[in-house]
Length: 318
Image (tube, rainbow, N blue to C red; front, top):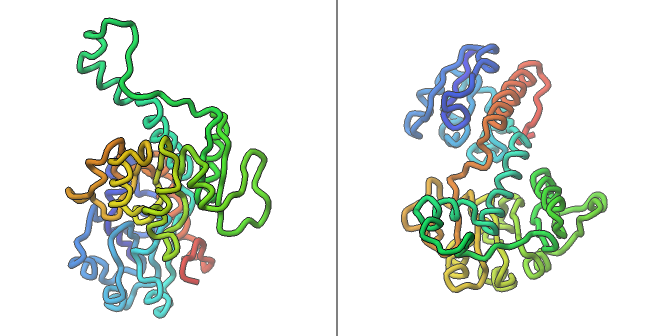
């Protein structure tokens, strides 16, 4: 049996070990794989592990020995799961591995938008404090979060973790969820999406990307937001109409935005959010703490072991 890792660099650029998988079977580890080379690299493998390297119908049909695909991520749209199911190939993902890291990154973006710590430190380094006649100075408004409203769109694992931290800051929390199987916990109020847009001081997106949520943040919903409100997106890039958001930022329709995901990644030079006013963009790193990536590798290996034992888990194409 052979395991092929198509794009190992993202999960493990060298600071971790693939031993949990290597202890199962010999592994061919490729840092990155061009699409044109995928089928050749996977030839003869029963197990293929991918993060963002596509496994299309054409590639899957070219691999007669393939029995299992492991996705080292929560999202699995990189795999043609229908084609895999037709072939009896199990596809598993890794849910929940990055919840603490992503929630922390949301708060980091929120604090940079409200406290401007990075900006202030850069200003000091550039000599601004040395030249200042006063003991203290600031060139951006500093915003207290206590007493303000945090809107969570998508109250799942990550959304609820962000809500708990927001509550600790003294924020009121509004949350939307597709289905509430039980009432929200104390301190969290269930709300309709339009109410979240109109009433929140900070909105954080954690909903899945579907036909219904694509461009959820667009001209209409941005028009509902307060002028001093902030938007944060660590979910999926296409949840946001980027041209509409850039226009809203540049025209002062909302106060700022922090995004860790864009519609096309890596970012294109002409993406309007890269130059929009009061817009922070980080390069899809919310998930990437060492601890998260170690969990990712461990759960990926556990998924493979469960498959080999005939009891597959985290299956996304049942």
